[in-house]
Image 1: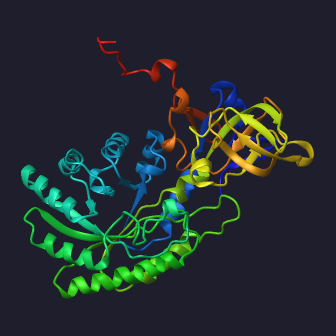
Image 2 (image 1 turned 90 degrees about the horizontal axis):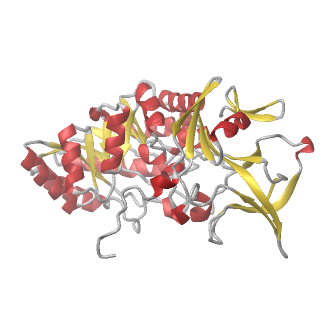
Image 3 (image 1 turned 45 degrees about the vertical axis):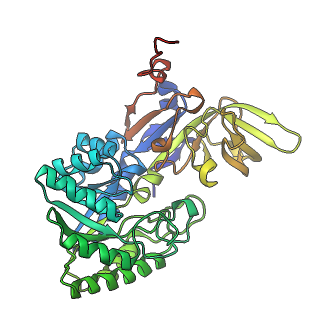
Length: 418
């Protein structure tokens, strides 16, 4: 469910015409629906009603300040993977006591910042990281709250680049290695063993992998209890998928049922890290057709958004539906590649698909682009990072200005020897 719909043949976001936004802001731009963001967060949170839980929105999915501020206001916590995301979260108004720090490569400076701000928990990925956390906490006169990330070797049946719970992935520790690390952590002077963490992947479209992971996690929790190590927090990560094309992921209520059943009887606090499932279908990328080009073997539609703006199709061969911003009579479609201006063959938004028969000057909406869109954007080919806009009811605001050419070289310098 989202709030992008046609009104008299013109695509609108809530009560605002997308054409009207494009006239004022220019293209390309990202566009988010306040109502959809709110509804998705609340629907996810309500799936765990009655449980002791903390929903920590995953900042990496979309870390724009306005989006973060909205979720902070709805009572969300925050899942972060860098010092920059910690900074963003604090600036947006998140309580440090609701922030969970994940990721395999935390630096000493990032650990210090997390400890100084008093975040809820650091998810530990390796023995050297735990030793560094203990040392930094001692130097700062703190006690670091930690969980150990366990790799349960569960196949999430998703794209291999976003699968994180298999033995061959870089994330977490095997159950046996995790037990050894918990034993070491128990004896460390500046570490508080708070919980256990597990995240098996992203864009998961069935409940079975979550059930399998929880079953293995539960065995580990019970084994730790026999050794006198009490787990008080279970972080089940995120990963619940969305519909991009024809996927049928579990409803949050069904996902919630799987989690409830997996944790039944355990006296623990639940931490969840949803990202894509909340923001993915709440945002679109709006682009304008520049040219039509007929090659010997296929047609091309050249638009003003490229792989630097939305890299998911190039990186994952990901599907994003394309909607005409002005609905054509009869809904004519053609077989074509929709490509951007970047000098790479991999620069495309869709390949070998039936797409709206749009003419130069027409606007297209790239759907389901709210997650891993702007956060993965770059200045490749010295392209300007695009604007971001949010709509609420019948008003819109620019939440991030489009870069200027001066922004491209800001901070650069030419040394005297040149």
